[in-house]
Image: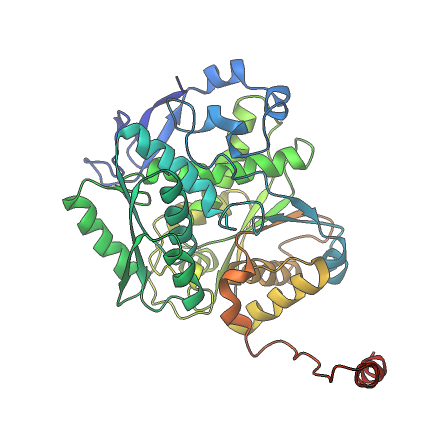
Length: 413
């Protein structure tokens, strides 16, 4: 048996039993999983965690399952890269990249949340899973659902990058391309979820699904030697990842794994879709919905479900927010690739470019131990940098032709 006590409304505190529900029937606030932390504290130690396989389930007591996990057994425990060359470029003393571009089966952090969501959906007895997605979640639900023998309905904006559409179709789900942006897709999915008995991972399974993001925070702590960083920069779409990373820090303190965290949490968004950062900068609690217009389509959620909570975490921890233009995103993708050999998708470009602004503005101190959360692989969004890279050197198949090019290369150096 697991350590879940039930669900609890984040607004009014009303308690519910564990069911596939996601909003409070009294105040319509979002529901969140409640745990028996005293019970977990008695059984989970650093030594037990380190003795387990290097995947996200090494923290299974803090996940919302009643039984052993059945999905995503090869997901998680991605590298924490000490980015010395990038740190030097940015004028930072100590910089790390939490690199979720590798290790995961579908090369994004969404494999974390889907592993938990589908494991829970199977516990509930669902035979069909579904989601609304800007791309990465579509890949992950398609892949893990296929491996689990589940029927899959995937809803995406029709304007999504073609490479992301193909990547989902490879797993042969029922892919539904909707004429509209993500918020339109999500509204439609809410209607579908109310009519059909399916496990929508980011609707009726959302309280359980969101818990998977905590594993990124647990790993950062473990990989830093059982301590939290001074600063962590998180890309925001719905805002859920940011809130769950902070929750993971708090949970490890509650069960005695670490001392009190003093991390400042920073929000990163694209200027073309920055409702969370706008609220942070304006010092308001109300998230004003926007119509997305950015190359960072994986972050293009104009009405973020966890936006209020993301702004609250950012403020409460002493953090701040930054938004960046499409050109800054592209430049940051290229900078990370040429300094650290990490090819990130557009969300990673948002994280790095935002961090650079936060450093220049003095919000992140240059001697802070800083972690950048990079959530997906650049192979997913190659279109974003097309026309913004150099060209190959074309030669004839002989040594003379090569050496003519080599002279030009050396001359430019």
